[in-house]
Image 1: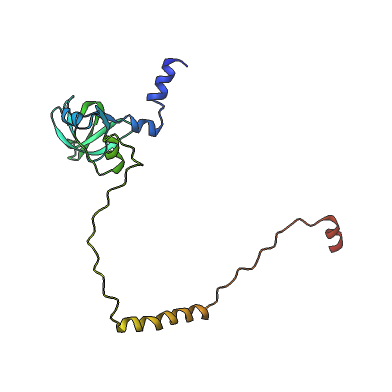
Image 2: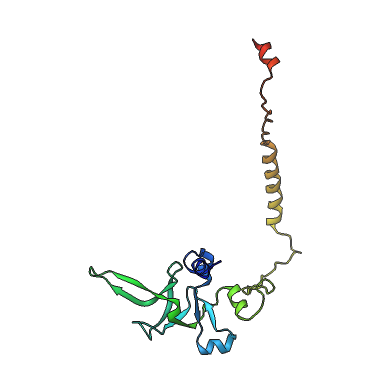
Length: 182
């Protein structure tokens, strides 16, 4: 295949998932040392710093991602229109550096650590231990529960389930059956 066709399939005719993978951006020097990776795909909630263009030097969180344009909208970067409306400005992902990561996603966190996401268990939020009641002491509640269970079973027996009638398979009448009807 010609190089121009390959390039077109990778850039202009790329599928949504392929374009989504191309939303990468370099990590800051601190994050590169910490995670041992040079770049990562940008997600909502990441903190980025613009390094090229009109808005150079501005830090902010990613508020929107535009996959088709391969760009992101950063909080704090807006343009005012003639009627007074403020509109987000989309910045290409190649013009920003990721300075802070949103690690809410379990898969992303384990990928950054260099582990397989399926092999590592999810973090479970710690719950308060439940207080158990002593079982030796008979209470009125237990004696009241038994009649309720019986009442439920009586209700079930009063209302028998309706069975659906079986459907007969329809077939085309044969010539003999047609003649017999006539």
